[in-house]
Image 1 (tube, rainbow, N blue to C red):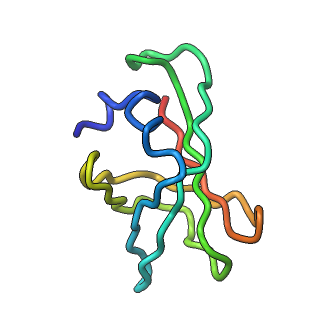
Image 2 (cartoon, rainbow, N blue to C red):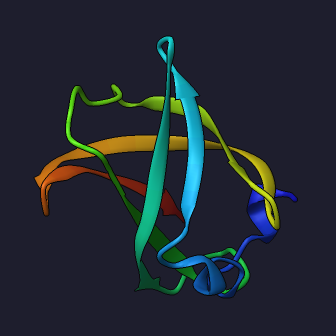
Amino acid sequence: MSLTALTPADFEPHVGREFPVEGHGRRLNLKLTEIDRLGAASREGGAFSLIFLSPPGPFLPQGIYPIEHPALGTLELFIVPLGPKKGGNSYQVIFT
């Protein structure tokens, strides 16, 4: 699926589900916890962000990672660590 075609509606059915990601020799399961609509943008459906939570431990550094999901396929997303949250590590992906 094209990143430019994705909208919040594509992710809404998957809140609470895990998205495996590989990076720096580790495989983590990032759980989608929030979808925030950020307002108007040139993209269909407007700008939005995804918030993910991983188990506690070392953070993945900021960068582009392949995230897998059975319904959405493999998506190369720019992931930014936000810091500790709810006993794990939080990350954000922004679509503008």
